[in-house]
Amino acid sequence: MELQDCINFLLTTAQHNVFQYLSQRLAPYDITPSQYGVLNCLWGREHNTPKQIADTLCLETSTISGVLDRMQKKGLIDRIVNVEDRREVQVIATEKGNLLEEPVLKIIEEVNIEALKDLDSTQQEQLKAYLRIIANGDFK
Image (cartoon, rainbow, N blue to C red; front, side, top):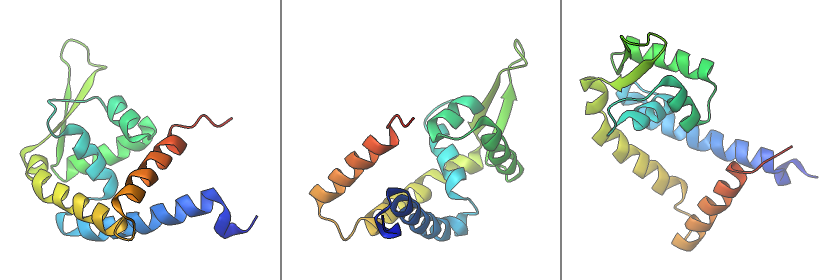
């Protein structure tokens, strides 16, 4: 099989291109695509645990811990320990993190439009449907 026909190569290359473009667009707000993902999990919700965030973003809990550390240092999130059960930590967006919602969601919409501009609306929906099938696949 030619490399350009390999699904892993195609998905990785496409993801890399979108990630680089998104990173560039988010840079003025000093957040990364991963940090956007965390904020998106928090916007409109009162709290989330690190595990819930990791599960939503399909990341390891250890990976999300480092992302949360960096976001807390930037003042984007706070972690609140449950006084009744110190093992439970809730993550909330700070005011600074919440203020990013409108401009960042606008960027996300623009990046999606740019990434899909060469496809008509039917192709866009088909692509998303096919990617969901692959993303939810059970590979053994």
